[in-house]
Every structure is written in structure tokens, then in C-alpha cells.
Image (cartoon, rainbow, N blue to C red; front, side):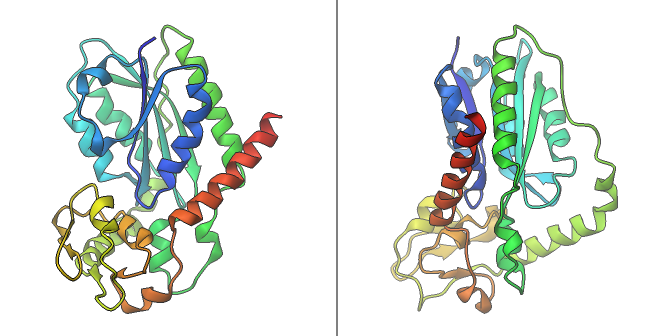
Length: 278
């Protein structure tokens, strides 16, 4: 069997963590590579893979821009290739999986399975004027959903062929259109205001290294942010150890979805997963 690829785009860190949990038991039976779409260089190896697992955060009922850009760069397959799509979202996924499945089909990559994991809202956490704890939570069924996804992927890999299996059209998505476009406009405006607080910054360089779209550059005193390529994933805001990256002054005291937060969340999900398996 050829190597499997689990390719993700992750903003604050949720999608990366979730796919890491998903990939671990698969690695016991299948060779698998787990990496960011922004770090993929060998497209020939991807084309030879038995299955692509593609994972992304849903932003305003739409796939992340990094994932869409990646799929649009894929060469058209000579033979149909299978894909399993996973998305993480704070509230609703809308038709985000269907949108990505449609783009994949243009490359002769067929969606044969999918999953949705509800978790922390990376934008809501830092944009909400009130610290609602529900914005930080994963769904109670997260471990069960991951277990079902693992079983579905395992079954797909043991079959020679599988029919397409994209989700049905989400009827509520058109009703959410005003909220979607308001959210997109707000994100566009706020990313223009992202800046580094000089009095908070220790110039550790984490934001420069973490931003896969190159929006931060090193400087003598503090990193410099350029919004041109920013998709407002907010990784920089959540991962800054000094809370020095903000788009409003009140954010300095707000909680963040830090690496430590995700480490604790991962432990809880894995513990529940082990209980469910037992």
C-alpha cells in the first residue's frame, strides 16, 4: 500500500490537533504522513496515495482559503483518487465540505467520506465582548465522531473502490448568508488592524515562524505585520506568549486558545476516546 496523506490547514491549532488524534490509530495499520497543506512540495507522491485526508477549519460556512488554494493547485488525476474530508467549526459548517468536494472533483479526486468536529471558535473567542465559555468547548461527542471517522477511513482503505459520499446540501446555509457576509466583511476590516504592541512584545519570533503565509517579518524591535496575504486565521493572536498581537486594545486581557489550551483539550479527548474504545 502507498503512503497515506493527512493534509490539514489549521489556524489557532484545533484542526492540527484533531487530525493528529485521528491519524495515530491509522498509523498502526497504514503508512501515513501528517502535514500542513502549506508545506506540501511533492505533488507526485500525493497523486500516488490510496487516500487523501483533507482537513480544514470552516470560516463563515466556507472552507479556509489555504485549503481551497491548495486544492486548486493540484494537477488533474489521470485516474480517480479518493478523499476523506474533515472540517472543524465553531457553530455551523454550512456547505463548506460540499464546496471543497466540488473543487476536488475538478481534479478527478472523489470525496468518499466526511466528518465534522465542533470545537472552539477561534474568532469568537477574541471578538466577543463577553468571555462566553461555550466558545472554548469541543462538542461532547467529539471522541465518538473521531472513532466513527477512524472506522469509516479504515473501511474505505480496505475496499478497492468506494462511491462518492459528500454531505447533502445544507438548507440553512442560504438563510445564514447575511451573517456570513457580515462576518467576512468584519474579518477583512479587522485584519487591517492587527498590530504588535511594542510594550508587550519580547521579539521571540514565534509569530514570524508560525505564519505560513508570511505575513510577519523580523525587525529590530518588534515583528512587522503585513495584511496582504492574511486570511484571518488568528494563529498569531492565539499563539503569542505575551498577548502582544491584537486588533483592539481590550484584547490584551482576553483569554486565548494557546498551545497549552489545546494540549489540555487533546488529553481530555484522548482519555474519552480510550474509554469509548474500551
